[in-house]
Length: 595
Image 1 (cartoon, rainbow, N blue to C red):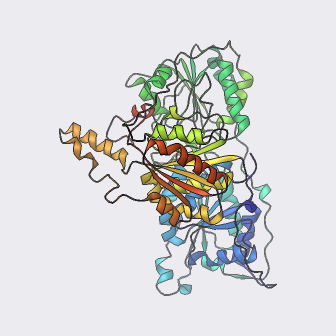
Image 2 (image 1 turned 90 degrees about the vertical axis):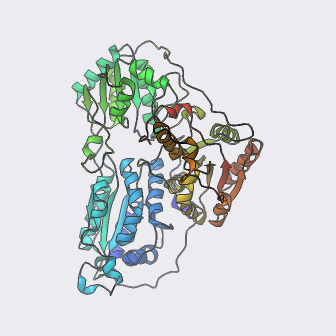
Image 3 (image 1 turned 60 degrees about the vertical axis):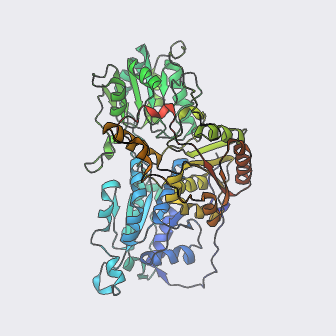
């Protein structure tokens, strides 16, 4: 894939500044960001970082990094999140004081739960109370600003000098990019930004402060794991949080083929293994399907490559019985667990724990295992497609039309709605699908779509986000940044005019309590009046198509949308779909508290 290039997007070019010997604290901070090779910073303007803002524009010329304006701080972090899911490299998100950090907190939690590095930068009114302006500086200054997000970031700092700011940025980048990866927060005092300097201090060399290379397990553990897998009768590999690297993808395929191991993947994370491969045993979902449950329960050795919620997945297969398989866990995720967030999930039973990222372990296992004769998996991959009521559009019908409209193109499915089933689309490349947002909230989809599309601009891969209407409406103003920067993107909204996931929950509660199921829609429907999602898109500078209400309209509308996106436009298609879930998702939706 071609590397993203900041010159590929529209840039606001500042008028040249007069030559001057005057330099400021924020100039040196901006120079450090350039030295870290951060191509973009996302921001909603705020007075607390006005000094840094000026330096990015008038000292650096609004390039390397280039500022991208967003309309809400949550979008700033979400766009950075989406970009990094493609490239693996962090962006900067600048949020205004305590109020901007509060706005951004949901997106920061998403990045935390998704193990994605984001460099969040903030600012505070003068720490020195004698320097605060009346009223506004007081309400925008807090004693410990990072306390708002400290439970779901890896590290934070509030440097009190320019050299300390350099060190804080270097350390933040190093920590964010060390597995388990995650967001960090650096807060700049207004007084540090606006301090006049006699000269710019020499910048540290970022190459001397890089993250450590991934740890490798001890050789005796690799040999033990290789022996178990080589001698297993029915090994199963759970492909979880892995990199987008193509070489690592090929090594995972080679490992499965050498072992004849059946493979399961997960829609919560990005594409990890070709779903059309004969060893891919069941369509991916958010929960285990009956087929994947059978495959997992039939395993004598399970290799988990940083699988999300290993304990819960094993419990879905084995219920209250002891897990009957040997379990090998490959993950460093335990290093990031704390007592505030339960995103670490349950404690899984493990027989061999390799504290390593998946990539180095897979490489070592490929060398250590004894290849076996190929065998076909015992389970057939589900290909069930949900039907719609006559004359209406199901999510699977929309997926089919989208597949026809993008035939012959490399597509990156950035996000998918809850009604999407893994049987609807095969993933054959690590960038074919990027996964969910980590935190399981609503509203992150548009921002993450813009970020991923930004990373893909200049490549031959078409960025496509399939969003629910609730997700779209909560985050729609993020799409303005795509139009403003000239980032091609196709967004298809599966518009069921409802927070339908919660309709299902209300139905279950009503059934449990012998109350009218017919009332499940009250307080859930997004209707009366219906929202015109295409007009909303046009109001943000995008091309809006729809609403598409009949099956016979689908192919023409999506073909036109694909053509426009290929031509450089940001496009939204409003598709009115029939509410429903795919079979591959239904297994997990059995209790009122499942999400």
